[in-house]
Length: 280
Image (cartoon, rainbow, N blue to C red; front, side, top):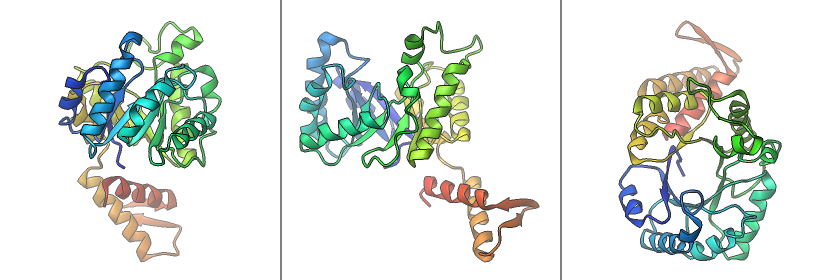
């Protein structure tokens, strides 16, 4: 399943769910957590369940409430009959959280839903980012820049110029490394200024440069820029093919020259990854 763009939609807004289907996102995340007030959660569960049943072929994920919140079991009981493609798990604290959700899904008779943990929302979670390897339902790791600052007593997640502060940048980096260590997709967090499309494009380009393979979104207008950022260009694909062809022509070589530059095995791995992302 390609996950360049994942668009959040409030679970208590079925009108927005229907519109979001046409936004071009690789997946929708129907949200039962932060965007839904406590009193509205029962109705949101009903709306999400109905939407899942009515759109069985659409790529639909659901963000449930945290496992220890008392709401997660009610979320799962309401939605699993609609067979969501995956569950976004907030406040995850390492592989143990994914294993626990996997247990609950299996006990409920669901054998297919994948899991995308939001893996940096508590201080304890930061120390578990290397524990996600070997989990069969794990689709990727993503992170968030909102809950963690409050949890550690920070007054802001960002510098005056908009850059993340060092503690938050560390959480982002560790999420990226944790995903790579587990062999799964690294998904960049949202860009809140949804009207700033130029800023979004720069943010998404930085994410792809750093190794993220997709990004979450909060508004349909963000999807085109995100998809473009995480889709290799024709020039990138052509160069990747040339790198692979050079090593195929000299299978015993460790280092080669291509277009006046030296290339070695890390360049080959990068080229193979680019073609895999591009679906070539």
